[in-house]
Image 1: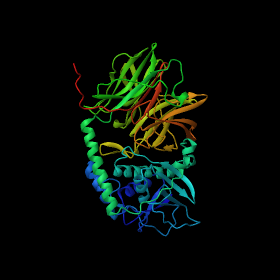
Image 2: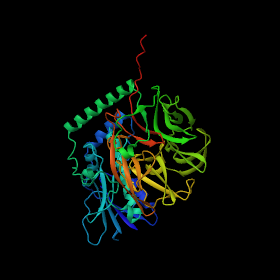
Image 3: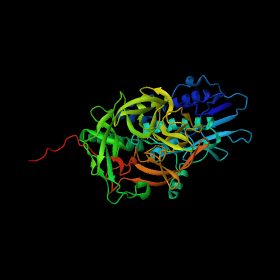
Image 4: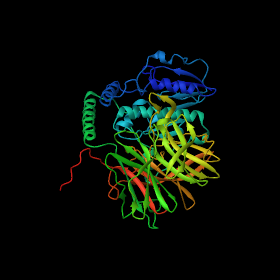
Length: 520
């Protein structure tokens, strides 16, 4: 396929170069670039705002938003007299042509990078779309884990824009469809048809106002970190007593939750229980603030709750979390999150609850978060959210958000070999892509706990019904959204799992660095 990329030649950016290089790397693809000046570019003073943010947050200035010399695109020829098979219009000014296929990129219905910035300034999770002749080809709701840092959020949006374009170019027709994430119907208009407006420009007064807010927020954040250990999560538990769980209740239980205590110098998160030998054993991410690197720990539960404190059972040279543990073939297995290593790994227990040995690397070369397995339709399926660009960039694997692009793999056996779904990513949605616990069966349907990160990482927990799961496609419908509140104090609700007798969640907490000494 011969493709023409239409971009603003007055403001070529690093992300344009990466996009063109990655398109050209697709099989059978050649790329030419229309470099004429275009509309929809960022306001000039947006660069000043980004530089200020970079200084306050100690970020590099040569990220994907930064401009490059025109020579950076020299590997790609200008438009030829030959008509391209497809034009991808990043500016929104390609002239309609009945004899020419044109894909228009938009953010909340508006063209250009300024529209992406406008959505972020308005506090929205931007909806990116590729459309042809008024029909949506591919769409996604982009996200970020850095909602308070506009520069990072903007670059995360650019990275996921690249994902969307490459996905549409390389995938089957089933992935080129509008939102299939679903949500309670009362919210659909809010998410699918946002009436966003591109910014008209950041004047000196507006820039000064935002700069003042940024400086104030930077000071508040640093003061908070001086007074509290952050982030800090906590695990909640309750005895089911034969009663309904959250999947049945679709609300917090009237009896509330009890906390799994920590010492304030570490936190516990990502609770995964399993029943073994007539008892429940809970596996958790165990994060010591002093090291900044989590391990996996476990604690047994009796009738009245935990028997002691979680004790370490698995540690690697890199961060581990989300200990997805399951029983199969008479053995106990675990697939912990190991995205810091760029792998998805399978472990087997030789001395339960400890003695974990690595049996296999299931997938490598990716940043995959919260890997979750389920058997369905005679095959094993593996869910995880994946960052864009499966290459080592600096000290991290990939670019963009950790939470908004759902990938699937399938295999005849949980030990593999695992085959990527042909439509990956099967879903781009910061509100419902990232896994949040085991997938369960209810009334003949599969219910998938997911994270709703529109208000920040792990801000809410949603329950999504899987409507389709096969090699031809994937779709789901979000039926319920649960948040922190009177029944679960704090600002976030993050994970949901259960055993036969207990149910577990987790969410945010405060851990003061300085605690008042007991009196007496």
